[in-house]
Amino acid sequence: MIHHSLSRHASWLLASLSACALLAGCGDDDAVPPRDGDPVCTAWGDAPPGDGLVELPRPTGPHPVGTQVRALTDSARGEEATEDPDDRRELLVQLWYPADPCGAGELAPYLSPEEGDSRRASAGLPVEDGFEASFVTHARTGVPLADEGAPYPVLLFSHGFGMLRADYTSLVEDLASHGFVVAAISHTHDTELAVFPDGRAVPFSPVVGTPPGMDATPEEVEAFFEAMDEHVAVWVDDARFVLDELTAAAQHDPEGLLTGRLDLDRVGVLGHSFGGAMAAEACAVDDRFDAGLNLDGSLVGPESGAGGRSLAQPFLIMLAESHVDDVRVDETYGALKGQGYLARVEGAAHLTFSDLPVVIEHLLGAGALPEELGTLAPARAVEITNAYTRAFVEAHVRGDASPLLDGPSPEYPEVSFEKKR
Image (cartoon, rainbow, N blue to C red; front, side):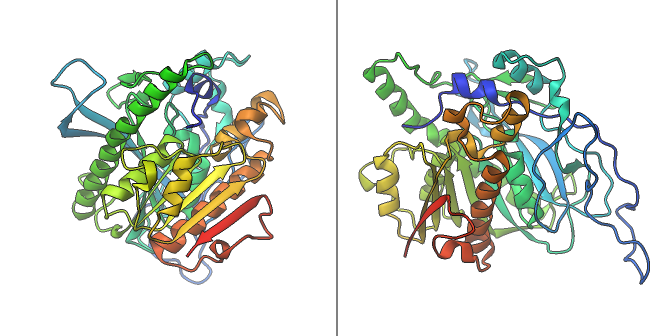
C-alpha cells in the first residue's frame, strides 16, 4: 500500500519562516571579477542562526542557492477538483537553482504564513502563533542564476499526496547547491495548501477523496487505490506541462532568470510517495525524462500492474525499512530495461525522506513518532536521502561518475543496495 495516511501525516509537517538579514560583502549582478587580493564573493549563510532558531541541514555543494516561486496555468486542461467547467488547471512551482554568489537577496521562508497557520491548526501541538519563524532555510530570493556552469541540468520534483513541496527543502536545496535546477511542483488540491500570489489559498481537496482510515473496509481501500491508479495521470500531466513551460523559458524567460541557463537534454523526474509513483509513470509516457527516482512510493498507475510498466530510463527505488512487501515495486523493478537500483534504508519510515524528522525533533524531542519518522537520527536521515539522490542524478542526469551506485557502501551501512545491470 502507499504509505500516506494524510489525515495524520499532514498534521506533522511543520514549517519555517526566516527573517535573517543578508550578510554583507557581496556586490550586485554586474560585479567585476575579483583581482588578486580582492575579497571574493562566497556562499551566504555561514553564520550560525540566532538564539531560538533552528537551521535546516546545510547544502553540501559548492553553489549558493537561489529560489523563486511561479504560478502557472495550463489553459489546455480543466480542473477536475472543482465544479466550474471553465476552471483551468493551476499549479505552483518553486525553483531552486545554483545562484550568483554575488547576487543580493533575502533568505526565503520555509513556508508562507498561511501554510504555517494550516500546520499549527492541524497538528494539535503546543506551539504558539508564528512558531514557523524558528526554522531557517539556506536559499535566497531575488538572486540571479549563476552563469558559471550554465546551462544546468533540470530536475522535476513532486511531493507526497497531501504534503507540501517545502517538506523536502533540505533535499532540493542540496541538489541545487550541486549544480541542478530543481522545479518542485505543488499539485493543487492534492497538497495541504497551495497559496497563490494573488492571495488565494487552495486547501487539500482531492477529487479522489481522502485516504481511507484504519476502520475502512477492504472494498473501500481497493476503491481508493483504483482511483489513485487513474489520478496519477493528472500529476504526470502536471509534470509534462511544467517541463513544457521550462522549455519555453529556456528560450525566452519573461522574468529573465532561466533564458539560456537550462539544459533540457538532461532532465530527471523525482518524487516521494505518490510523487514517486508519478515519476515512474512520467518516465513510462514521456522520453524527455532521462531518469527517474521514487522515494518510498508504491508504484500506482494504469501501467504498473503485472509487470506492465517497463521503463527504458535508469530508475532508482529507495524504500523505508517499514515499506510493506509491495508486488508493484517488485514487478516494476524486475521489468526495468534501463539501469535499475533498489535500496532499502534500515531505521527509515515513510516520512524519513522529508524534513519532518528534523522539524519534529525540535518540537517534540528526539525519538518522537518513530512509526512515521523512523529511528535514524534526523541529520543522518537527511544525509542518506541526499547522498543517494544526488549520486543517482549526477550519474544518470548529468552523466558524471557516481561510485556510490556501484554497490553497498561502508559509508552507509544502513542501506541495503541492489543494482540491476
